[in-house]
Image (cartoon, rainbow, N blue to C red; front, top):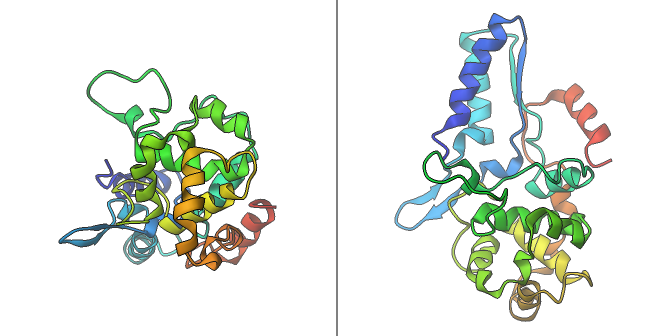
Length: 242
């Protein structure tokens, strides 16, 4: 789990940067990392808080005030949603056989999995959904080994991601609005719309959701606060999503 390891790594990397004469530490934490989960009886809890904007802003201010006034601590992907990152990643195919975002692959104890994607954890479910609007279907199925959106037994798991009832899982996954927009996009895509969970969404859930909130395009644009500055932001926009 997140312990919070990003805070630990941030402090280590600032020290390493100063010792080696570097003036910045750059992470790649996205906008969605600032969004927590609702825990009954507790309220909103963000288990990845040290990946979010609040930590980035406060830690950067602390470093500038107490360590080095001209030091930059920033996240390059802060203005972008998980879906925007997925779209950008989908433009590269040479990592398809190598990358993973499955929690089962990072257990310290027990038998190591033989597959990069377990297909059972919320991260597998979300990454499949996030990539599907931006990749040809055979490519997505080749990465995961099976079609998670055509598995009716995963209905409750995808309902949690979509926040149809309740709140998103206590995992590093995107916002509910991102999952709903991705599912709506697939419901309008001939190659995906007949799959069990996509068809279920279109038939029983989509009509109750404001259509304006299901549009992908607004979620692919930069949003929210960030610490990039104009120079980095201009360079990023020249390549990201171009």
